[in-house]
Image (cartoon, rainbow, N blue to C red; front, side, top):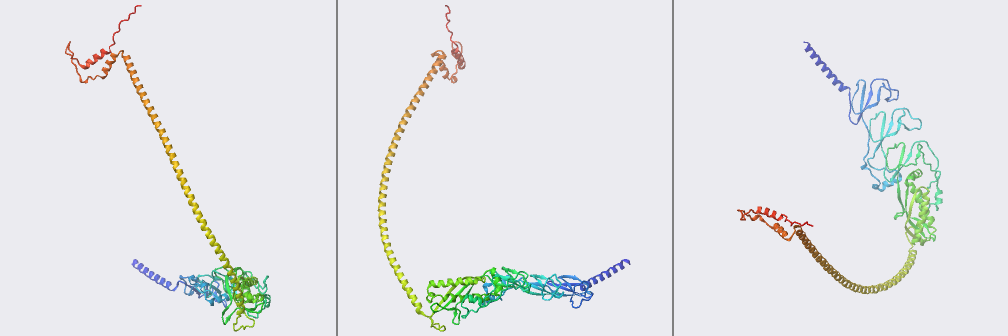
Length: 576
């Protein structure tokens, strides 16, 4: 019975526990999906102060500062409520979609010169953060620090990435980052800071004239016709244009605080020429002789990176550099210098080059004072009109050109004839020299053949003499060799005879000594007989007295004993 009640109690407990777990999982669980966050709202607690939207102190009722990131979280639904909000995503861009300077059309190039140009493409973005809660800013303040308690635009920006931000506390505004491509620099202008209205110490004037025919007649008048004060470059922290420029790269700059103007570094071309009948920009001025001169000029100019800030600070954009400096100065200098030349000087090549050189030098001097670098001013088109010719019908005086051309043609013809005469004389001299060369060549060949024949004959003679001398030397050597051979034969024969003589003498001496040793010639003969006798094939038997049947070996011993037996010497008479 007890076991049954225990099993029932366990089942009830499990059922209650499972139900409680399911209830807890379904009511207490907060699921925050990916790329989202949960804003917590407290249902109980202290009331918020008047005008405050977000709870800043623990235990306050309402929207809380802290948000929950993606995942599972558990909160008491009686105390808490929540809202699912998307995370703040700052894109990183796509460099493959960026459009650079080489793909710009004429309209966008004009925008670049005017300072309103922006590159196209999916660039990195930044997030400008505006704090919605906090203390009110002091009068005149707009930008706040992140660590402060003021509401307003934060100085710091959000770089590309994903951020868990409470949308009730902060507003995020996306802006493209500053991208400076190769060949450009960025001039930075502080929009806020301490104002500074100091003047440029080296240059306090700014040219402002109109590029038309009624412009001042001299560059000095042009410079003094209109002046305006230019502010000095700002120091860091002050409002105004900064001297240090941004090099090519990506910069995360708050556009609410700083403005970046792109300037193309390098050289540009500006032309004052005749485009068509309705758009004739050529410069007109009178010559020293009263003729009306019209010239087309192209200027190659540029800005160095170190002067980019000065240019933007003084002029604002590239268009104003052209409108206020380059174009009016070209017209003014052309009129001032061109009026000192005669009409024919603009037709002759040397004088035209002098006019272009003077124009370039004067333009370089004036533009250099404004930090504008000029490479060259090219005079491309020149028209000379008679004083009485109408400027509307395009009548051009050809008489002056024709006269100058004919005089130059006559001079060139005279020079050509002189050159032809000199060339004919040179050709005759050349032909004479060629004949001399042929004669000298044949002479050298003949002398060479004679020298070769003499050398060959001398060589053959020397060879024959050498062969004869060599034969004589060989015969002499052979004779000496034969004599030596005969001498050797004689010496060898004599030596052989002497050897044989000595050998025979030694043998005779030996025999003599042997005979003397044996005592007499008879004994020597017996010795010789014993030495050469071979008893192996003879056998003798002794059969008794008077019979000679004796064994040979025994006989040899007896015979040898007899032979070697010393002969008794006759008694010596010792009688006195």
